[in-house]
Length: 261
Length: 153
Ligand SMILES: Cc1cc2nc3c(=O)[nH]c(=O)nc-3n(C[C@H](O)[C@H](O)[C@H](O)COP(=O)(O)OP(=O)(O)OC[C@H]3O[C@@H](n4cnc5c(N)ncnc54)[C@H](O)[C@@H]3O)c2cc1C
Ligand code: FES
Ligand code: FES
Image 1 (cartoon, rainbow over the protein chains, first blue to last red):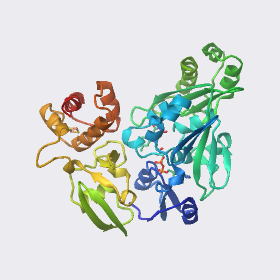
Image 2: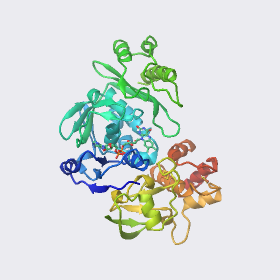
Image 3: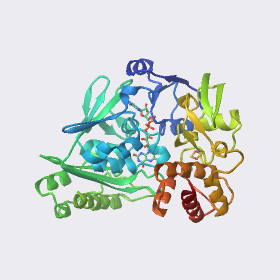
Image 4: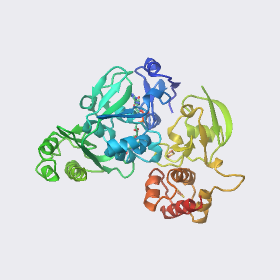
C-alpha cells in the first residue's frame, strides 16, 4: 500500500490548515482506506477528524434535526431523537452496509463521497438538508454535483447536516445483495408546502424526480404515481439491473413509500 | 513513523509503526496475533473483525494510528484462563465451522451482537452477520451456535 503521513487533527481549523490537493480527511475510513488499497487514490496526507468533538452529535430543534459530520451510522440508527423526529432517517441508517460498516462509517464521509448508490444523499435531497461547512451553508440541491462530485472546495470541511423535519416520510431501497448500497432507493418526504421524491442508485447522481414530486404535491396518494411516466434514459445499466428495470423500480418504490408514509 | 499505545487483550503495548500500517497488519505481523484473519482485505468478508473499545469493526479497514489509545480485543483475548468463551464453545458443539477461516470474525461479530441484543431471533442473527461471509457451512450451524451461546450467556 502507498505510504502517507497520518495526522490527527484536534480541531477544524487545524484539519483545514493541514489539507492540500493531495490530502484526504479520515472520518470512518470506509471509502478512503479501500480506495488507497485498491490503488484508486493516493494521498500525501491523511487527516483524521474523528477526534474533533464539535463534529459529532445529534441535536433536535423545533423544525430541524442537525447531525454532526462524524456521527456514525450506528448512532443515527439508534438515536431516540432521530427515531422520533424522522423515523425514516433512522431506518435508512440501519440499512447501510453491515454492523461493522455502521460502527465506523459517518454521515459526513458518505455525503462528501457522493457515491451514486449511497443512501444518505437521497435523505439530504428529500429532507431539504442544509450542509454546514467551516465556511458556508450549502443547500442539498446545490451540493450534489455529479458522480462522486460535490460542491465542496479543497480543504472545506462538512461540520453538520441539518434536515428539515417533514410531515411524513419513507425510504425504500433495493439493496445490492453484497454491499447493501442501493441498486435503486427512493426517499419520499411530504413537507408542509411541497413533496420531494429523491432517487439514488438509478442515475450517475442523486436527484429529485420533479414529475413525481409535482404529481404527489397535488395528490399525495399512490394512484398519483401511476399517472407519471419514468423514462429510462440516463439510468444506470449494469449486471445488477438494466436501465428499464431501474426506471420501473423508481415507480414501484415511490408508490410503496407513499403507501408506507 | 507513529507511536501506537493501546491496550490489546488486556495488555498495554507501545510500538512504533509506519503511518500507513493497517490495524490487521499491526495485530498479525507486529503483535503476532494471527487469529485475526484477512480474507478479502476490502471490508467485505468480515474475517478480520475485532473489537475496538467494545465495538466490532473490520481491522483491515482501520489504521493502527487511528485506533491509537483504544482498547482492542481479538479472538485470542476472549478465552479466560484457558477456557473457551461460550460463543466458541457453541461454535464447536454445533459445528458452526468447517475450515475455520471465517470463524474468528464470526465469533467476534456474534459476541458484539449479543452485547446489543441478548436474545436475537434467527432473522436478527442473519441480518447482523451480513458482513461476515462463510464459504463452507451454509450458515445454518452458525446461526444455531449463536442462538445456543445466547442461551448460555
Ligand atoms: C462493505 C461496505 C458496504 C457499504 N454499504 C453502504 C450502503 O449500503 N449504503 C451506503 O450509503 N454506503 C455504504 N457504504 C459506505 C459507508 O457507509 C461510508 O459512509 C462511506 O464509505 C464514507 O464514509 P466514511 O465516514 O467512512 O468516510 P471516509 O472514508 O473517512 O472519507 C470519504 C471521503 O469523504 C471525505 N470526508 C469525510 N468526512 C468529511 C467531512 N466532514 N468534510 C469533508 N470531507 C469529508 C474524505 O476526505 C474522503 O474523501 C459501504 C461501505 C463499505 C466498505
Ligand atoms: S479481510 Fe477485512 S473484511 Fe475481509
Ligand atoms: S468455515 Fe470455512 S469459511 Fe466459514
